Length: 342
Image (cartoon, rainbow, N blue to C red; front, top):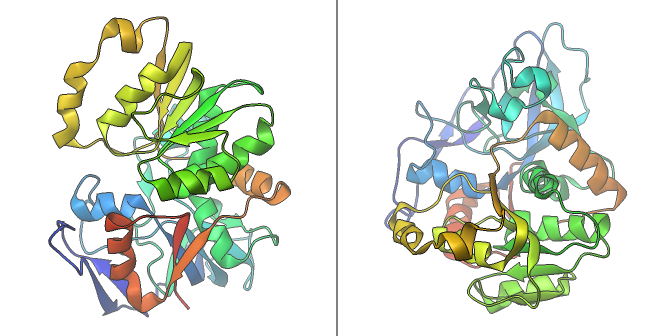
């Protein structure tokens, strides 16, 4: 089979081909695993983090990609949840131990043995992959393959982030950064909290206009002041400045939810400008998002189908994986990007 491989950490400001196209054996499913003939795979900022070394694989080479959609091609011994031809998806959570204190209470995302698809195990930038059938999900018929792919990470992690805000209908919500996850959260929030004003802080006029087109109450720059103080803000950016500015926008008792794997180390000077009284006092909270659970994916897919939430998607042919990665790094993103693996 053909697959894109990551062999090393690269600086995407200098390297134009961080992934290498290679021929690999088609994987065989082990006990309780299924093999998936991949149709497409969403392209995520987490791939940038893997390539640039912020969350690197433990060993190389690795096939990246964790928003995988395809058809079951072969079932391993003992597998019973799916049959050949079933359409399934695989998300960021490739596996968890199932026995630790976190797994036992449904917090698989915090499991010390959590494994990420496309980082710890081969993912979806390929023609085939295998996965434990317990970590695969039926794709609702409402979605095409391309529409479903971004829902498996950008959507599911957005769902977890929105739940962690703890807001009630009528309370104000802000979104800082407006890429793949942000635009899905806005669509979700409009459905779940129809009386809540939604404010978007985005760096470009195009992103701000996109947010208004999707129903935002207001859109501006990160340094702009929203028309109202906010009960909660979800920050999906990789920089510290946005988090610090968000704290100034919160009401007393407000909560900042940071949905990011990392914050830029060269932006840490911004932390020196935090004022306890202005930024943190009055019982403001900061909550971080780590990974996702299987229930996040299952619940969100069901919710997205019922609303429905249809992502805005730009597709790339399989041969253009490196171009897609660089576009995500360097260019304006409107919605989500998906690699076609057929």
